[in-house]
Image (cartoon, rainbow, N blue to C red; front, side):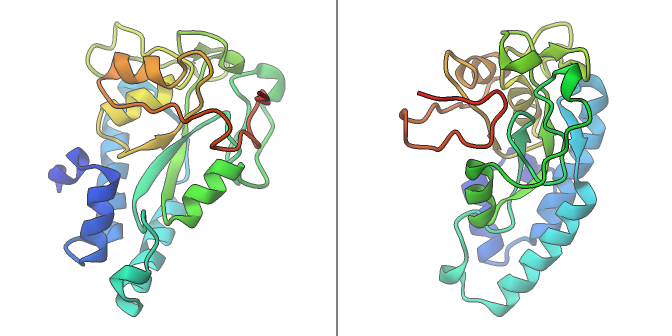
Length: 212
């Protein structure tokens, strides 16, 4: 099962559609790895593991009842979400102490679209305060450490995403980038990060709000 930690989201989706592996196995393998590495790197700041397992079981039932071509592109594949995005039931503080009691009651547009594509969020990941810094650290969650060397930083602002993906805990994740907030953590943590063309992906459902 450790091999699953090195595969891309698209490859995992293909394997799930072909019944080479179950979504439940994929999700449980990544959850176990997050539990192993997160105490050292502090990347995932709030998990939804029980909900993810339930969603994986539902995904596997749909695989049995459906044709492969009818399944969405990321059906049954786990992922993570930057904490500054709304994810139902998860904190949405953006690292700000004044927002410590804020819990999302709906999904950000990008997150909702990702879930519609079949992805299963495992939890939310750390950010700098208000996503403003190159170091992922704040007074609510503390500092995120680099999976290659915990004495080193992970960059920002999507530093929690870079760290958990770089460690193998998540196949892919949702981040945001204006001045390098995806690209720099990707570079620091040895993963691929993509900043979409401006206006292509809606910014609605993020804190702080992003307007072009």
